[in-house]
Image 1 (cartoon, helix red, strand yellow):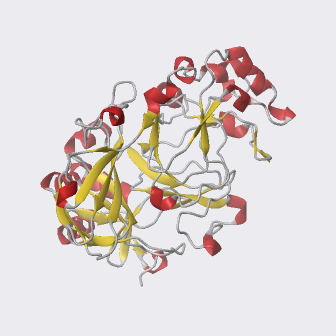
Image 2 (cartoon, rainbow, N blue to C red):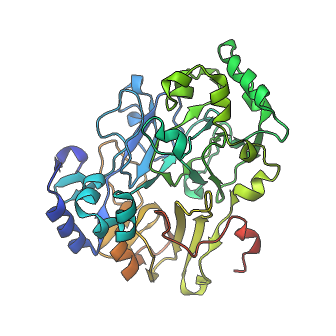
Length: 421
């Protein structure tokens, strides 16, 4: 079996390789697993990564608790490897980054509209998988992130049942603040940073997490994600600020609060408090405005498959990303047409996608190549991709996420309450 170590890395002039791979596969690119560690979190052990490889980057780097999908975004980790966070395409015995493929082939990969506006694939998705909760944190908006040469980061969550047979230590997520919370209360929490638990969760509200549901989270909204394994379509940025000083007895350093803040504001408590979207954080109808449940795209169950919206809605009136979950019954073949490029991960079963094999692995070594992840170009998506479940016993289930504006027909938040199928 090929492994990452057996592949030759190509760093430039990849267009001929890309074009040959697309011709062979029917407009698709095979992607290798893309593992990312986090030094301040404990792995939840549901990514199917072999337990001996959880600290493959070294104990000092922290455990691997994330797998990134179709990413052209570097991970913002201290002491990171040069290509950390970047997805690699695999073509025979060679590999090259999706970033390089997009840079050289442009609209033939991501579509002309996205290429003209962004000159890149501006989104990515991941599984994040932790034993316990993540610190209460926010992601800067576009104007705030621009001050440090970065981009803002809205994001979304979906909790795939296939990766959540156990909820781990704390399957609840805190969002925002209780209505009536004041800026002075939050400022005092920051002032108490070095006194232990700064008490910011005392001002917030937790929601129990349920597999098969999700949330849409705009920038500048505080959130402390719980311990379900989470599929997370998001904007292509890794900015954040941690507002909680102690999590499960572990220190959160001040540097993680201010890592994406201009240096002159690193001790400016008022600036840090005012980074937050106050109306959004104290919204008394927060769940109504952010909670998601799957919505079928159409009534196709009798045909042996169902495609469902799992991430939808807009951020400041703009659709920045969206996602679907496709489930195909054993032995069924179907053609799925989409309006934009997408990254796909297989979470159950086996089958084919045009001329590529799909096979959801049971256990993955750090250097293994798998057959569960694919990038579908916009031309192939528009033409229609043929999926077939080759199993006789279990469904074939795939998650796929899309770039900005790809699905103008996607529902609005709250659509699950009006679902007619």
